[in-house]
Image 1 (cartoon, rainbow, N blue to C red):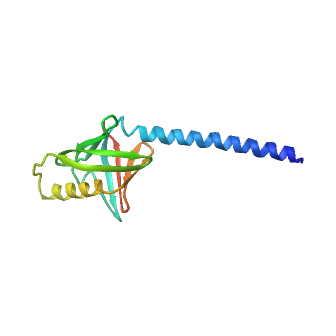
Image 2: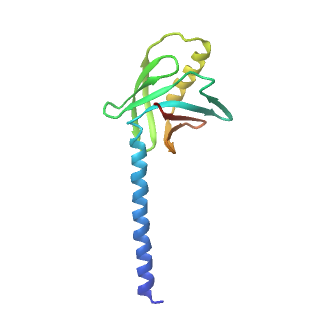
Image 3: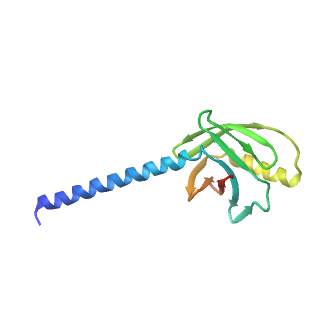
Length: 146
């Protein structure tokens, strides 16, 4: 095989793989973009080896407003809002405000844990059609709220 043939084959593979990586990048941007077009409901909450499901906790839901860079929702008891910044797959949420009604001791524990989670640096990813928000030790999985 001549050097010219080898060079042509290598050039073909280089061009092919660069086209493929652009496709993956645009798919990733499309997934991250879909965070804004949906209302998200918590489906599971894994902390270490423990996992809570919707049968053991109040409904938590989120709505990301891209134009206002504002996150709003319900933490299982109270409505809340906060500013956010999404850079790549890293989500930082600003100070949180909202209602302050009492919903019982068990709800207060979940509400406090969720508030503490939002204060961490969060990694955003998609697992199929589910939105995953991850910190160093927790993974919250949300599904599209219907």
